Image (cartoon, rainbow, N blue to C red; front, side, top):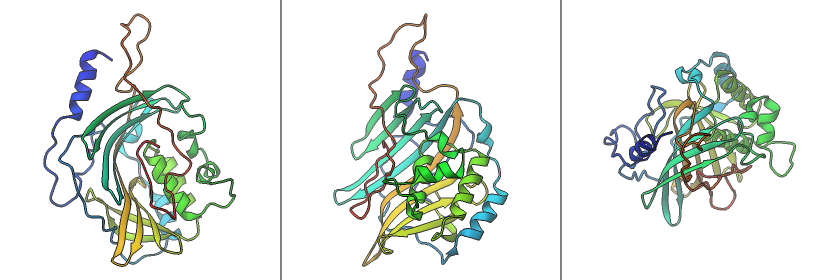
Length: 305
């Protein structure tokens, strides 16, 4: 990648975006399969109130129906070895709200990169990492079979996977990997075979997109783990971890999955033979933890697990 291209990539991060549409907390994802850039937008301060769900019921039949009719997305077949995913994350705690807008590149050999804008101080971060940076991750391999997908959600060697752990794991995987149609069908069937999930129709995310809410509960019903799935493609649109308070559900973490595409290279690639040797940007080798939501204490999620 040339110096001019790199400068353009970083400059795109600092470009002011258009105003936020009044109908949504966050603007809708683009659909043109181009590699996106995080934006240094006017910081958003959505309320901490949890997602309002319509009355629901057991999720099994809803998920089986979804698995049987999942359609392909235009960006499923975009060429390139790197899955490119843009996500936006809000994390609430007693000190306020932390917000991140991240574009991440990830390949099956576990090489990757990311560009991010983080608040409260508007910080532009750019990182990259080499193959096999974390051999325990194998994010893309999690979708090879239902057993592997379930094992990715297992904790402390427990054979039985609790529904909240599977919901959390699918949200975590969606931050790194863009599952294709068959992989999304697999995820829907695994969810359908998981007892204790409820389905809630016409659930709206912070980008104004309407999908199917799939909820699991822990801590004797005091913590809610919610996935919002696209009703046609089965893609994860959003995730929320919320706790029940005297005034209702309050979000601890809210995640929006915005753009998904593929690319042949990252925003920065190590020079090859014959190219000028440039100093690489600093990188932190972010690692994907087995569990990115911790209960019963305050939920703690970062975008750099």
